[in-house]
Image (tube, rainbow, N blue to C red; front, side):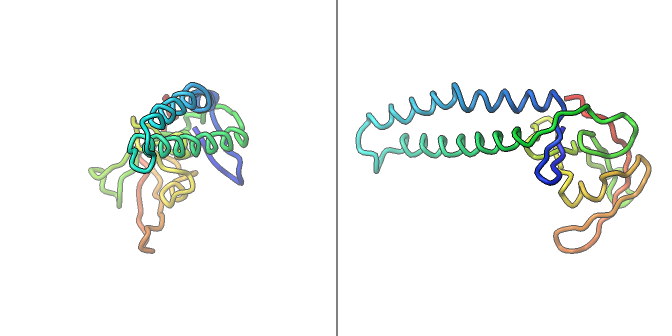
Length: 165
């Protein structure tokens, strides 16, 4: 799980390992693969109207951006333990909230940096308005955060458990 604070990102060992493996793949085998795609497309001839070439170059750009993001993230990472199972909302916790006290209108999310987002569970950054509002709250407590339109929203913390990945 991650928490960014003044350019330091806190990661569990598992999160660090996952992000490092992604970086190793993107900067190794994936880089070779995209270079081969570009070369194959280049051999097809005229580059101005070569859709395969342009798509491969765009993919390469996105891949290199991700390599830079991961490199910077891991350079500033501090590896630590998973959060305690104490019912306090903090990065690395799976949090369930009820909007405006309506326990039928709930949201469950992982409180973590976007870099650790997964398709298994929605992720909210600790720096997001919701993340800032609920961070440090205990199960059963109410929290308030500011919506993009400037209005305030309130939620009740229903559960906070360490993410098991």
